[in-house]
Image (cartoon, rainbow, N blue to C red; front, top):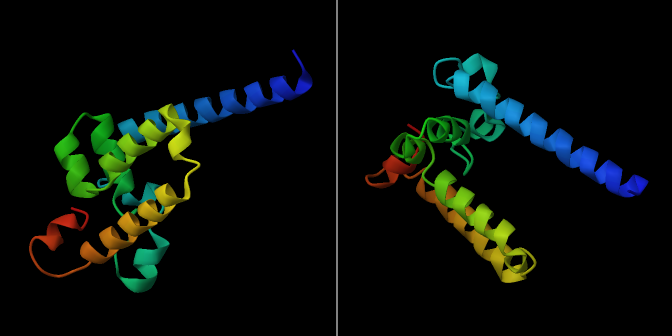
Length: 128
């Protein structure tokens, strides 16, 4: 096996082990109960508005515990984005198309705007 392939394999192995370790840590540490252990959203601290990623850590925690309702309450876009990412990884051709990225940006911007509106039902999109 060539040196380049070994480096690539080692990098993939390191990424898998690091990701697994972080998921195990998150499984045993609830971000809503131990908020000091997890990074805060810089955008939210700066503006007071929710970005499209606000609530992702709590959504992943809930998903690791198979609580999809709590995951959707923490960030309604997290689960659909995970499914979209999985689909894109399975079908690589979607990732290389520019319309896919424009659509993704449009969805993220629309979600960011809607989740910050102060009226029902949009308040349900804010992290809970």
